[in-house]
Length: 94
Image (cartoon, rainbow, N blue to C red; front, side, top):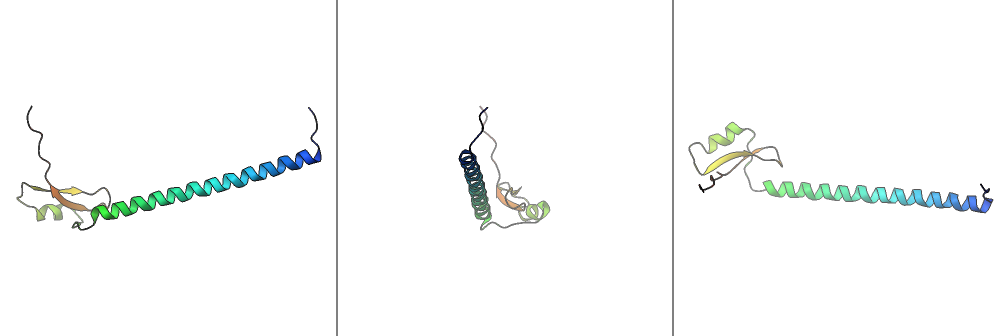
């Protein structure tokens, strides 16, 4: 195995340093992309509940729709509160 000259060692050291800097930049870019995706998802979640009445419990939501066949209470996956929506109609018989 041949020995590296000081110039070759310096080149290798610089190359390693550049690679580390590039890796750091890639990690920062990935973190920024992830942050932006989370922000977009949060905005979507907020928009999905916008204008809907939120109930803290199922009982409170069901009390609002008591004897209705057209409305039903459901737990929102975005905000964790209860909303009122249309009852799902059963599929017609084949």
